[in-house]
Length: 234
Image (cartoon, rainbow, N blue to C red; front, side, top):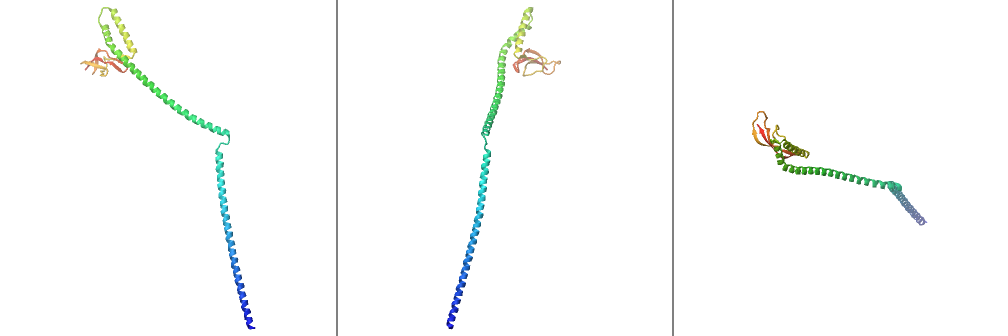
């Protein structure tokens, strides 16, 4: 009888132990399940946050692209009339540039032409003066002889007057062509215009003053055709 009671007690203890182990196992499984659910919820929350962030980025990106498209669309002419106006403005600007270049080219050509005319006139005057000077120089000996003939003593007054008239006509022709007689008597001696043939002392005249003229000198413009032969005082 006691043996049976003892066996029954052991069986009860064994059952109680198994029951406790089962409760412990169930509690552990429950904790694991709770932890897994918690991790899953946290993962879902993080994924939702990332998705929301990506959605915001995509939204901002699409918004930026839409703004760029809008700005590019606003830059382009909205009507055919505006396009035509822009094309006309471009053509007008190009024409203005061409006109400015042509005006500048014309101004340079006009300046060059004016310089050419000045050079040509100067060369022509120089050539004319040179040719005329050579011609007058070759005639000067004949003019000298006419002057001597006009000063010579003669009883034939008509002959003398005729010579003077010819001489006056020649002087008028020389004057009309720019030929002038070099002044001498009473003037200061100038070696560029005069040639001294002798020196004399004269208290009535100043230093290097021309007292007498032996032969007339002539100029054409600023060029000396022939120096005057003179006598210089003091």
